[in-house]
Length: 144
Image (cartoon, rainbow, N blue to C red; front, side, top):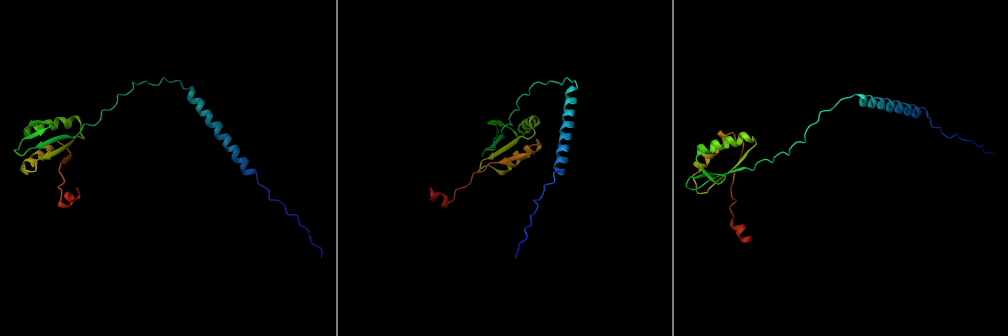
C-alpha cells in the first residue's frame, strides 16, 4: 500500500494591515511635529513673576481655661467673656479655620463653660474642642 505524501503550506502572515498602521503612525508623528514647529515660531514674551513666599503654617488652636473660681484665660491671659469674644472674633478674622480648645476645671460650674462655648460661637469659631481626662478604673490601677 502506497502512502500519499501531502505537503501542507505554511500559513502566510498578511502584512497589509501592519503596513497600513505603520503609515498612519508616520503621518501622525509628521503632523504632530509640524504643530510643535509652528508653536515655536509664535513670538511671545511670557510674563515673569517673582517666586512666591512660603505659606505660613496654620496657627495652633487657641486654649481657653475655665478655672474653679470662674476665672477665664485665653492663651494664659485672664479675660472677661466680652474680651474673649472680641479677641476670638479678631483672630477668626485673620484665620477663618481657627480652632479653640476649651479646658474646664472638673469642679467648676458647667454654666461658666457653657458661657465660654457661647462666646466662641458668637465669634464665629466652628472648630471647638473640649479637653477631658479619662478616669482610671480599679482595673487600670491593678495593672500598674
